[in-house]
Amino acid sequence: MRLGLTRLSVAQFFLAILVVGQIASASDDGVSLGSVAPDFKLRNIDGKMVELADFKDQKGAIIVFTCNHCPYSIKYEDRIIALNTQFASKGYPVIAINPNDPVKVPEDSFENMKVRAREKKFMFPYLVDESQEVAKAYGATRTPHVFVVSNTKEGWRVHYIGAIDDNASSADAVESFFVRDAVNSVLDGKVPTTSFTKAIGCTIKWKNK
Amino acid sequence: MIQFLLLVMGLSFSRVEEVNLRQLQSRILATSDTTYVVNFWATWCRPCIEELPAFEALSRKYSKEPVVVILVSLDQPQDRLTKVEPFIRRRGYTESCIVLLNEPKPHLWIDKVDSSWSGSIPATLFIRGNRRLFGEFQFSETQLDSTFQSFREGRQ
Image (cartoon, rainbow over all chains, first blue to last red; front, side, top):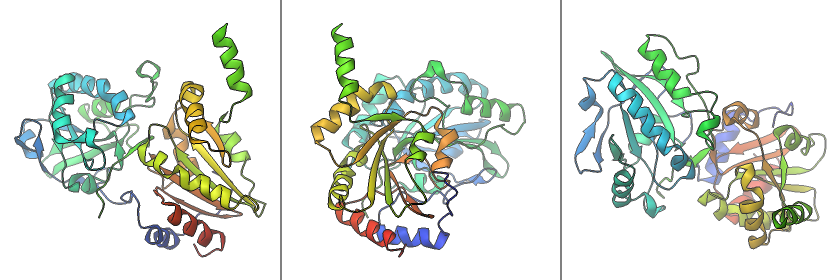
């Protein structure tokens, strides 16, 4: 609430984290805009390993941390498919990654990922981040959480982090198409007008330590 | 007609009030000695509904003291009477203040709650006077109570 209240100091906040013990990975971690995103090597639903380096002939990629069970991911499923349809041919394919612990959410198991991908006819990789290291390295906190990266000499540069658009509940009521506009900007060699957004979403289900 | 009657009944007995962010902010008085515990949740969020009993218990435990627990549902407004309200009745929550936040475009208001909030839930904000503590916590009843106590006493 903006009530003219003073903000908690960083030290106090981290003390609070220590006291409480259980918290989603801090948002300070992970990749930042303009930085180079790390490569990864994850198992796809067809059993094969997929890495960003496999996409070296592409201009970039739309990396989406998502899952089966989360209602927000489900609401966005068709829009994720549409992004791939729109941008794969332009050199920006979708790469979907499920980071959730299937012990906590059985619907997000590898077997159920295969079922969902088949039902929805995913034309893009749907990878399992079993160790959750990739989600941590990117700083993903929720599903869906998108990272738009371009393929440069220095590596996979981050141009956009955030939500797909500004209306989860209704695709028809969307006014700002964040990911679409960001990819189009990067394709035009411009900096996206909006390069970072927040959204309500399901917390990534981290494994119990 | 039946739908209309149900709607009227739903409104008259409603436990879950629809508010916007400004209305929610106006519930929190920075000048009082009241400690506010504001939890953001939704019926579709599993970890949220797992920890809700802890908030209801906290509300009950401190019912004689200046402590206000506000459970802020982030469900869709159209689900208020069909999902949120029945859920609250089924759970039998009577102590906490329960509202549904009707604010479109989360990217415009998430930072107004707390700039460190990524947008994932559950998330909880403790406020007392000019002090505040925010985190994307998931509490057990014991953790919530100890965090609440140490916050109220100014230890964090």
